[in-house]
Length: 294
Image 1: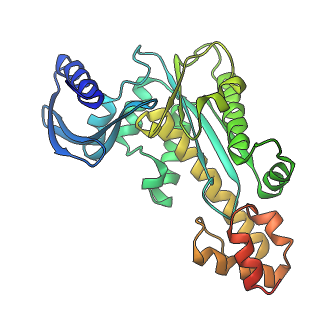
Image 2: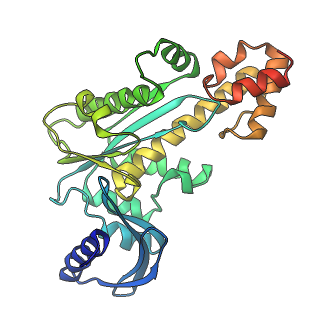
């Protein structure tokens, strides 16, 4: 009997074969498969995953990005597809940002050819150029930002088992709602939400009347990848602005080097600087205050 991954892969490969693509499995991964896909003169590799409750996902793994864009199902209807993603969730300094974007298939293909991918795999220069490309392709987007001071106030108000994921869920819902408002009459036929929590935590917050796909590794959908780029670009601008305000270089992350930066900021400005610049519920805060002698 075939596994769910094998069955889903077979269906996916068959659908591509009908469209003239050649698919071959080239490698077994620890939790998936790697396939090579080719057509006339173009080749790319993709990683294939399947898990219970998460479904089948296809992730770019190298080769011709334009070809990968052609493989992506988008909404499956020739209509636009929407997506949302966040930045700053795992970073001590700077805001939490969520973006939502809707792209039609032609825009998705052009952006894929330009190198669109999950922002975590891109450097700052590429993120900046892709942000410009995305904004030239669509006006159907929205960005939701919670600066550290607002974020910390919300965290302090949390009770009854609610936590940072509830803030994030509300921000996804806000960005998606405003993105839909920017779309006018041409709404996306599906909205892919990068799955950061159980769908039950966010479903009741989302605009009604739309089809949602809560997907792990959602960046395989171009609209989600585009949202990840817009969110990261906004996050990086904010962290540069905060650094300029306090005169200390800030950067993403939550490791030991971040503790050193935080301790320097506290020594210069006092503990209150963390309210303005950092997500204080992170474990970094205790280490920083101890290091700074507070």
